[in-house]
Image (cartoon, rainbow, N blue to C red; front, top):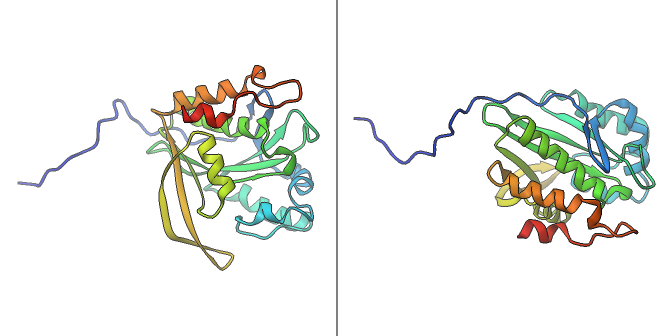
Length: 233
């Protein structure tokens, strides 16, 4: 007789999901569009200034200092068959209409309904803005609501405290640390894993939508209720 043991709960009606395709996601404060070379000059201005070295601390390359170098980096993302990379175009503020950030769908696994937001890079003007929050929200909403995925991941260097805080603020749950996970720029990287599941998504989505409502901001754009308070509850 074969050995038996505990097994996971059944997933009724499960079938592999579609792979994400290049698409435009329209929000109130941001447009999320497939990254192309048309965005590279704007991204150079947004993320590669002399004071932007810290934006590149945890990326696999040093801060590009000219368009040609940035072009090589971004073209590598666009051409990678394992990634689907998007540009963020804020619809308000000093960078309205110009690409000011990027991220990629990575670890795309349609058979299991899993995808990750990887390589988030935001220019100064987009950091701590409602356009940045909405951009990630739109990517999560597309994965869960349009594609029917079961799991959305966020990972970062364990020393990247801003990314860890962002994950918690957005409603991701900490899952653990992969030690000696990578060697990046000749240095060890331990990687922290976070996720939101399809069961958790409705509550997380509601928190995002409440925070993003115009009524949550005063005339100067300051939030009335913090997203971290909404996701913590």
